[in-house]
Length: 164
Image (cartoon, rainbow, N blue to C red; front, side):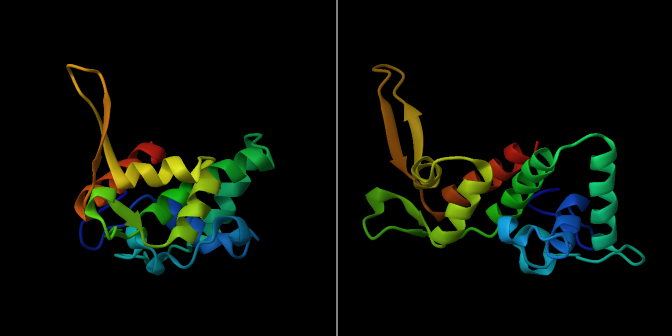
């Protein structure tokens, strides 16, 4: 439900609510979200008749408040969720030397995702550039260059893992 939905179905409602509510809640400077139709993971079926995602976002934040979430805890949830949405927008291209694997096309967005997830940019980039294997005999770590398809699959796996 994160990376692909059936026709006329939406993914997790939190994605759509966050996209709709971030701007009106003053969170966009931290989350960098646009409308749900602008993001790959949420661009299929964006609206449900009778559902106001911005209103539902407000209700969700009120519930979080009633449960005792601090502002820092709510922002952590919002950043992780926004990072998953942004992961779907990442595109890849082979480096000029294919032995260097793939590169992330929008490095600025990758930096923002790293900030939201609290990870180092160098480590984040390497995950998409190379597949890391261990030689079973020598126990030596080997970095195998990834192509666009491999990087894309890594992105989808990361989104699913982060959201879970």
